Image 1 (cartoon, rainbow, N blue to C red):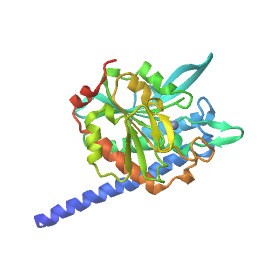
Image 2 (cartoon, rainbow, N blue to C red):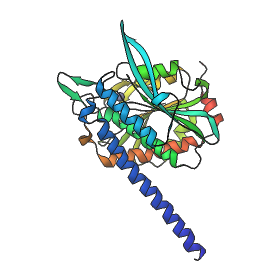
Image 3 (tube, rainbow, N blue to C red):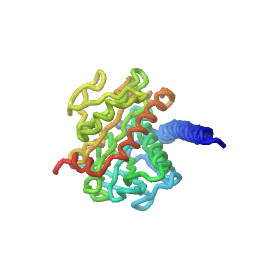
Length: 312
Ligand SMILES: [Zn+2]
């Protein structure tokens, strides 16, 4: 075969491979969201039977993806208290070994708990935060397809986020990997309902100076909205960005972080936060954009992350 044709054929095959991965990732993404926000999960409230069902599902997905457990059954049980009441939660933690800097970890977090049933109504939490967990699983699948991811990864499905970020706090207090080896936290919380203005918000780019330049120069299929101040607007809503979700305990530990999420929407924290309200086209654009950002972050040198670290 002439060289030109063989190059063209290779390029075509590569393109088909990328397209087929995207299609597969997108259908898995929506499927995971559906399953995690399905009726039997009953809103995944911490310590309720629905949360255990969610954990069974996520553990199975971790195992199917070939991710490795650091603790038995991927489970990290922890105690916390609200007022004088002692409570228990369970994080799920899986790891993927890197190739060049295997002793340094990028930690992805996405909380799987939600509000459960309130006044007889089930809060399914499809966007908040079945979407974040499903995206984390799809990103794990993407990283598995890379011949050599530079860094090792921790994928943490956190519990008890809704009542005060307790799962993330418990992980930082007793980390499965020493905190010095954690170079970045990517926190995913509500990723599927940005269809109205095609926005995806990002807080924390200022914790890694090079990210802002890359994102501003990049051509993404969602409109990335960078937020820099601790308190400020997310669309129409005031938000304490610095403490809004599971990146907060990592931020306080001096670890660079990136928090991705959509705007708060009319179904936020209502019984209508259902998968039927998700626009699959937006979901695909969000995932494509996040995939390129995550693969780019994986290729940045360790010194770059080290320089961004804050002393504790
Ligand atoms: Zn949330």
